[in-house]
Length: 379
Image (cartoon, rainbow, N blue to C red; front, side):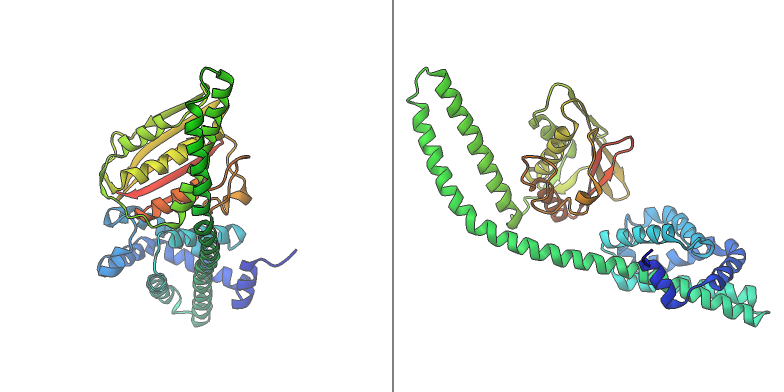
């Protein structure tokens, strides 16, 4: 069986069974101090202006974050230090990346934890110098492993961003070169179609085909518009926006089969956001269209709003098959689609608009099956 990244890291720092035993011994002494250390940790953050700005959700979330930190320290000292431990720490690192936490604050925060736990180690084992040495060595190793895991997530994100930027650059060059050239022939077809409409008279069969050509022209023009929107930085026409009105309008604009139900929940209670109502409407039109497609021919789509600390969150759930793991990794990239006839621009555009508003969009599996897309915007 090949060596995992975590195994390789543990081998590199020589983290072994002796270190595990030492951490278990420290855990016995540290349990009563974890709440105090958590207080020290967040008091340090709140006393530092720039560090406080990096605190996601603001000071109102500190109580919840203190509980989370205590649980993190408890597992740090109690283990088990296996692949599940790695996966959990990797997820935490991904959160740090997603919220844009500067790496230097991560190192500074880890130093606070290191200092406080070293103090606990001294108080518990100073009467036994060999045991104290073992505990300090083990603590240093596990905290270094924690930093290595977090840096690994930043490195992966940096590589992914570089690859994405390269793909988008190539994509932009392609779009810029063909967008104008495609508009010209489509314009000629549209003009000719207008003339034909006035000459077919009462021939229903001919009118049906002309209407179909018109529909497909609109589809083609829509694709080109979405492609161009991906490479443009259209300025945001920001104003106070009622998400309830925006989402309701988007839902009304999406056609759906009779057996697919769309319900809206909790939107009226949402505070206003500062945004471009036209572009935000596009976000929810795209998400609801995708959800209706996934839930068809018979299913349900639920759009649910809620207020979080400093943010507004809107979930778009569907009862479809969900997204497979391979596609999920590149779900928000241009030209990635799960539809047989899709182009793969909708979610990429959703992500771009959300980020330009200072927000995010994420995918998760819907409890009970299906997909959930969550849009988060600053309140």
